[in-house]
Length: 166
Image (cartoon, rainbow, N blue to C red):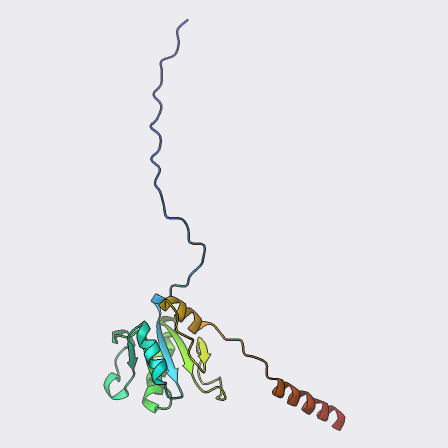
């Protein structure tokens, strides 16, 4: 009895080692530059904090008028909303292309929140972080405010007063 001819086995596949998947999902913040709209004066320590993470550029309407912000070398563009030229620049160059930028509004805590449609509204900058990505992630997170006992008590008394008055 004859045996069938031996068929050659295929060569084993070459295994390629790939990097393990990253478990922590990260936002790619480098795609968008930060536009910081201010209604209050930016403190020196806050400006130094921003400069430690990248290039800070203060918008000057006399210099930067009619230029696209994409041509500016900045990581953080500071626009003063108290100046009419700066507001006009924001309306003309930033607001229509908002998907390109992370817009942060830096204001006093008592000011109206409906000034503009921002990604986050802050009254103080986060503390210094070890990495730029962590700082920018915290800069974009909406803060949870501490409840005020006195405001809650006053609202409760006022509500009770209005109910008794009726």
